Image (cartoon, rainbow, N blue to C red):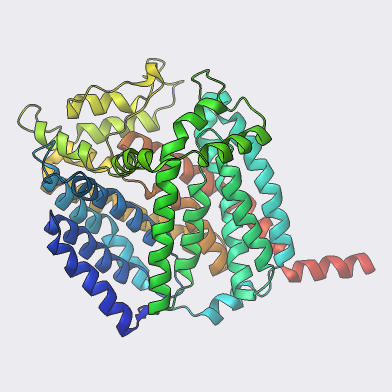
Amino acid sequence: MKRIRVDEQSRFFLLVICIGLLAFNNGFYLFFPVAVIYVLLYQLQQPYKPGVFSLIALQHFLQIAAGVWLCNYLGKDINYNTSSRATAIIASSIGLCFLLGPIIYYQSKIPAQSRKSLFDCVRNFSTQKVMHLYIIAFFAASSLGSIAFLFGGLTQVIFSLVKVKWLLFLLFGYMSFLKKEKLNIFYLFVGLEFLNGFLGFFSDFKTVVYFLIVLIFSLIEKLEFKKVFAVAVIAVVLGFFSVVWTNIKGEYRAFLNGGTRTQAVNVERGEAIDKLVDLSGKVSNESLNGSIVEFLDRLQYTYHFAKTIDRMPAVLPFENGHNWLRSIEFTTTPRILNPNKGIYDATEKTRKYTGLRYSGRAQGASFSLGYFPDCYIDFGLYGMMGLLLILGMFYMYIYAYLLRNSSANMVFNYSVVGAFFLEFNALEMDSTYLLGRLFSTMVVFFLLIRFLFPWMINYISIKAEKHANSFLER
């Protein structure tokens, strides 16, 4: 099994950072998640294999470690506002290992790949045709996204179909890098996706960054010090950008919905861009301090877990599996078969198990518990690891199916895997939402594999293109 090679300078740099964390306040809780993510990424990301699970690991790590960063920024002890944050940090880090253990196992079973082997997979694909399909999918996805909530029960299916655009984005990216064709156009698409993300109410500009990271992870063979240092600088820049965005997004979203308190965009795109530029220029140093606290508080997702540990089993008994069973029942039972089926409200569960008084769906707000606490609710800390292992095995079997059955082309299948799984990168998804998205995406992708993907492969194949030309000539 091949590993990504790390030069001596990079190893020393990473080791110094890791050990140096012990010298800070709450040092052990800074050190432990970092040590875990080092080990996970080393085991998980192998040269020229899908990078989506490395992104999932990294995003989970950020949401675990941010709780400690917040405590240190405020100059507080790890348990200053809950007696169980330390437990939640350690348990979440260990739980991440159980979740990704099956993926690491399967990743090692995939035959070793090289840049040449991936190039051989895409050399008979037309970069031009993939680009055309992506452009069509870009506009189709924008239209579908704007009407998704109008169709009730089909909303989840529509959002799953939007993933076809990201499949084509990844495929075009792989081909651009491997064949060294149309790289400037690919970078243009990255910029357009990033800008377009600001123009929707939910401002999902982060999505294209995530997919770009997945693409880069998949093509890494060696880590050199200059690359590690460059990544560290980029991370600092992105962190600063995120703090600025946290500072302005409330006022920006209020402008987008015209003060209606709805999750809709009621202004022209040009006006939205002008407002964004104007707000960015008004950020002051004084306001950034509060934005850093707010950003870290929003990024971290161990507080709800800690508050749940505070209350269970001291106040509430463990559910012994009933919590996840309710989520399975809710997501697999059509409303037509159960007219009394309730409306999904993540905040309701969060209020119950944390004891925190949050506004809910009726007030236009949503506070999710997170699926790690969902596992704890049923069986406690030890049983939680078992549930996460089962979920990881479920991911592994889906991963294996997609990689083997999406097509006969490995790079196309990498793109399918990335488009399917990237959505599940967040720790804050509760079990009901996670299972709902997972089941609907499975159904949609099964149908895509049967009916759409064969046509796509045939269309973008250069052999198919030559065959069509010879037919026309006759």
